[in-house]
Image (cartoon, rainbow, N blue to C red):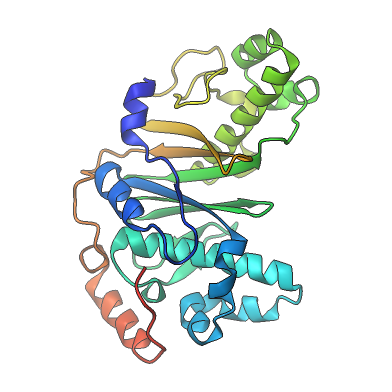
Length: 284
């Protein structure tokens, strides 16, 4: 199960700002149908301060950026949006300014005109993480590795009976680490489903005691899915965990993922006409 999942989920790439490395995102989407990026908002600060190109990059998010009074919140907001746009642009082989980022009810981002593409965004402290998939839904979640989740207080709300039994037998340090890993996996899965915290975390589970890839389990610990979902947890920057949940609808991941191929022609023409009226932006 874990070896199979490792072949189907792309490990997150560290993007150090607009420079990427974006080729790894493009390759991940082409080979496995999914890719993800982690970065820090400070790595995007020079791009945020470059106002001449910022407005066409932000698009419909420009008014919110301008209206956010707190400079720290304003810079973190724009850094997360730029990270999403550059990630998607790299995966689709286009310019980030040509992508129209919009939001569903609840705030989940999506790309107008790209129904085949699913996005997920998460952030905590100074970390931003973005997931993108063209094979189905994707969810991504991150937490600091030093966040303490009390097993005694949260076991009934977070854990299945099988998870409770396994974690209860562990030393406290391993118990805490196991709880944090389960929390991020469950957050990623429910985000992929579009449910968030509305879904009962104790109604589904994952293997405990492993930091690698895992499968979805029923409350009694038996397999609950047969390959259509893949999951992975990754330590990043030495101080965060990033968990990813990917659904595979069975689409051919070798298909061309260029924007001009995937995007509706009429919508592409409309967007291209609008972009030509703005300042040009270099491709990632």
